[in-house]
Length: 121
Image (cartoon, rainbow, N blue to C red; front, side, top):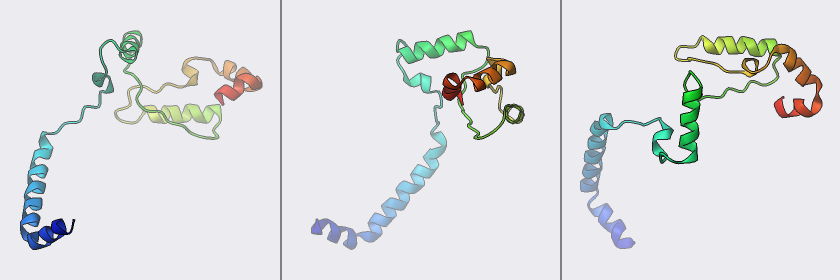
């Protein structure tokens, strides 16, 4: 290990120049690198996850949700207000919440039923 240290110290200018050269090459090559955000493309075509995602795309009109927002200690009307505000953000195509599956009356019933309520709230 000492020989390695001595070599680095003795040839520090060359090593520094090589480092700078590689950094410049990497900086220029950065524009040729793309990021694939489609996680489905990494899975085999016949995997259960891929099949399930394909079924979801066929069954639902919008894209598959890719963000989840959790807001603590809000009432149902406040949650609906947040849902509306989130839907107004540029790039947001759809916001799904509990009211898309059940009515507000059903939500009130769920709140009163403790065993069910604990699984939702």
